[in-house]
Amino acid sequence: MRAVEAVFELLNRVAHRNREVPEERALNLRCAVHLGEVDIISNDREGPHVSLAFRLEEISRASLPAALNPIPPEQFPLQNYVLCSEEVAGILSRRASRWGMVSIGLLKLKGFPGWREVFRVLPEEHASDLGEARGRPG
Image (cartoon, rainbow, N blue to C red; front, side, top):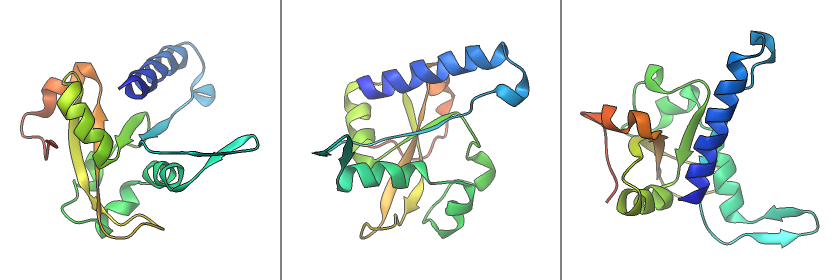
């Protein structure tokens, strides 16, 4: 939960900064949250859980046609958003109802077997916009 709080705080700070700088200096982010054991090596971190987070971060509108039950590509944001793994979505849905989650579909992630459901985490101010939102893990 703290990782998601930190990501949204960062996105809020970047949005505030972007309002004060010329468009060509604006920062735009895409964030992914996953959890698991991490292997610590000299000045770095690695392991399958780190790799999975990077695979989530790589998802784009172009990824959706290969997904099962995807959202329409035009509903996938281009910048300043948060994605999370099924594991994180399950924890958030049980412990932190202030964030909404929308399934973007089941995707095959390079280097990982099978299909993985991926969720977009919505900031608190948009969590109530879900209405007919797709899939809330439970």
